[in-house]
Length: 566
Image 1 (cartoon, rainbow, N blue to C red):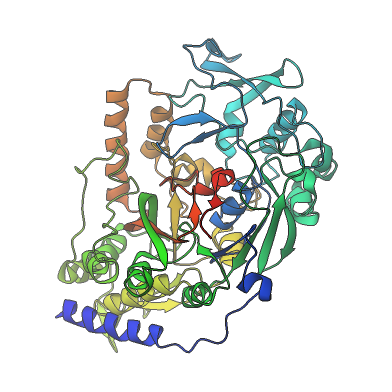
Image 2: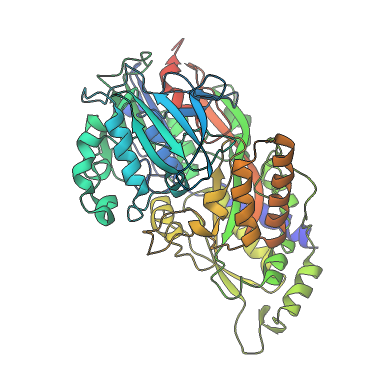
């Protein structure tokens, strides 16, 4: 009966959404509608909350900065760790990584990198070890609110050999000791003066007060124009000495409503829709049926995990019986089949089956509304009033559910969840926000009171320390650093996260990963939904774009993109 209701509900909502009247496509003028050969116009759904590479976690920022900046190390499309800003990838075998004892007697490692000789900032200033040391100082200061606080905590010392070579000293010998993908350089010659007051730095950084300063960027492009909420214009970096990009200018247009995004593509107002921040699989499948002859539609499954973060400070959600009732109360298999044609499989933990560390031997939660109702009754939610559960004190069983406004599929999933949870007596109030506010404040500062729906992009075998360790819960005291937005606290999980990082024996590491997934699925700090596949909607003439399927996204190799046969 519930499945039938689900099917009818989905059909009605889809008809409603697809029938929305669309106004004329938003545009940058005739040049955007009919771009010049040297221009590429990209549509995405979100606008960044900040342009600082190390503050806040938002894919829109990552996407734009990938075209303008270069990391020391990245995982390529084959999921292999490679150098980008460095000359040689350090390893124990080549002698650039050497085990050592820390001053506290711990097993650590010293890793030596050399910056590429041709690496310059966009204003002509060479990228040097001054930038490395300054970036480290910003990350180490607990008042600045950087996201990846564990990297800077572990990196306790940097020795500078010369202007291009430096050695990082870590207080642990991790299995991924040479992967410093998250160490994103900040130009000392521009931003050090803004660091005089660390607590105020995140509001004074040049990345947000002087975003179009060429000296902030060391990649193929620089940010030349920013119109908040509308678009970002990238132009060629005059000091870039790498491979010459195929486009003189890239315009990134922000269109939060995915139906409008599709309309803008068809009108010629944009050239392509980014796979990382564009249409969802169901929309892309429908689009391909109608317009597949005019565009290349590429589907890339990857380490992208859609889920519901639960605020565990909420007294109701603290009860594990309620959390288990909620997951039993939704038909995730039906969501996958009805909305995504089975292309986006149900997630049972945060670890994707594509990753070698995945295990199938963990608790799973089938759709079982009777069991969900029984669990809620055990938790004290026994009184029904107008179809909604109350406890004996008269408190209503209600939660606020939030996600990014304008994402048609997320909003549809919200309504499905709302409908299915209502059948077990749970009242859901939907309250969505623009992505810039949702990620920049609500999620980052843990202002959501119930549930927040979004996705994590991961690297291959990426340890989720910053999202699950109790030391990474954002708070006013740490200036909202860290990404444990649920507020999850579990001593065994903390110990596992720390142990996995330093376990060099692969089989033993796999056993610890299995236990991590078991705890995750048992304790349910989040409700796993599904693993995403990203659809790239590309013009036939665009060549060289290769999706990666992980957090080091396709735009990092933007210099390989080119127009052919236009």
